[in-house]
Image (cartoon, rainbow, N blue to C red; front, side, top):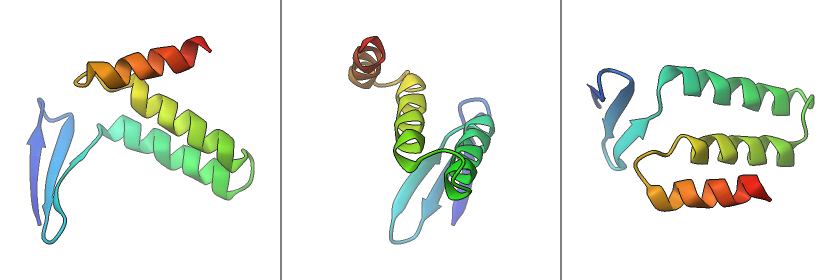
Amino acid sequence: MVVKPIGGGRRTRIVVPGVGTVTLPPSEHLVFYAVLLALGALEIVEWPVVGIVGIGHLLAGQHRFPSLQQVGEAAQSV
């Protein structure tokens, strides 16, 4: 496994044998997702809500893909 920081150290790219290259989000986003999953696991928040919030957060952070950003903005306006 090869780990390379990219984007000024905010993101990490990991090369996993047999899987390929995986780009991880910044650490503060990983913490957000971990807390969100913990809330779902502890049944404090329902799983559909965890999924919607997680996907919304992921779409809101997609600056590289304008089409995904437009989908997120359309979902937000609904």
